[in-house]
Length: 318
Picture 1 (cartoon, rainbow, N blue to C red):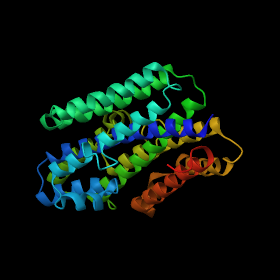
Picture 2: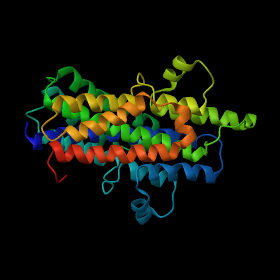
Picture 3: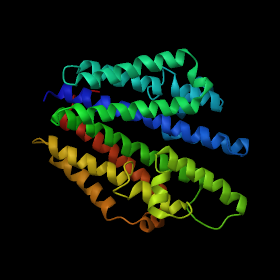
Picture 4: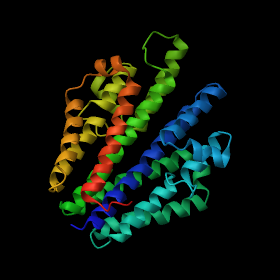
């Protein structure tokens, strides 16, 4: 298929997934900010969120002081921030419009309606009235657009490029979330804490699990109190957890295989190697070598895969 068409489909899916993941990150921060905690700890949480998205310099230039209101405003509706939910949904819709003939009517209408509705909601002040409900709506629209693609599109190259964009973006975002949240709690050691700390930790880990729709999954898999090392295992190594790094890389490798061309062998090899390491990895090994170092390296490799996919299949200048 035309590289320009592949490019639009890939980025349409990435931007939709990015809007959802931004909503998930904001939601977990919003929920944890409601817990009893010092102003310093609360500020650190919002700072972490901006660091995840590599937006600290842009935010500081515009707002200076970090406050929950300013951060949420910047991450939800600031059109000058390319990673804000509004900017992502616009970019997803523009990419969809460019390949409207390749998409099914249902896929296009879902994208277009999402864009029209988000504008109406933000103008009507629905976000300010209930941020939690707004974040749920963004997640729901992303689920809907992904489900419509899965349920109505022919499973040809167009379909596989959209899936590739979704799972590469999801791998990147899950790794960022785990990295920043573990880093914030400084859980390189998993020692005993006071009863009060343990209670706070329970709510904190519950919020993180809920942010990736994994709270019920955790209960089903481990049937135990929430422990940081098991949260790490679930979100990194479990193949049957839909948002884990392992599950995302499995989808990336499968979809790369479907669209492979004469120059993509090295990209496939690197993706396959990364998947194999997740397949045979152990959480004890990862924690022993340092979770932050492991996830930083993972993000570098996913970023490199994204660049290689652009070179092998897509319009080079995006």
